[in-house]
Image (cartoon, one colour):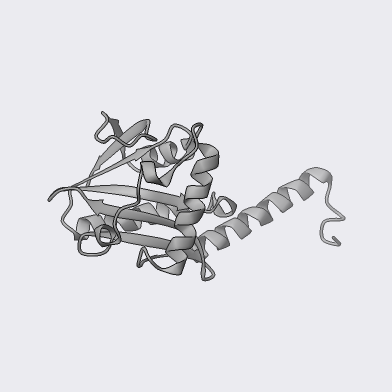
Length: 181
């Protein structure tokens, strides 16, 4: 307070905004993404949180039975991969990669805790999944998403994914994307 007192209102606001940006950047730098088991406690926490969020965000709700998660064997190396993002050891995000064929993989279940959005968590997880795909010899990635997940559309487009024709029968998908690796 003593540091802010001599400043006029405009400078106080600028300083507070700058301090908030520094805090955000420090948090973002502390996010760790690691390949792990889709059956771990952290992965289950993230997936359950993701599914709860979909129920509230999708205009028709969400039922897991209509769009089941991949079998754990499909998202475990060498068939695929599963990543968990953590901040100070707490799980804050997840994502999965499954092999479709010799050249193609599909990104699924990318989720970031609402309280940690804006830190680049999803981008870090997407990069980790792309690295896994390259290690698996994949040359193309696909994904689908719901129209309500506008922040995901923006992320995928800025990361080089292009919208393509429907390639699956996911009842919750409205947009399909593809990227050449």
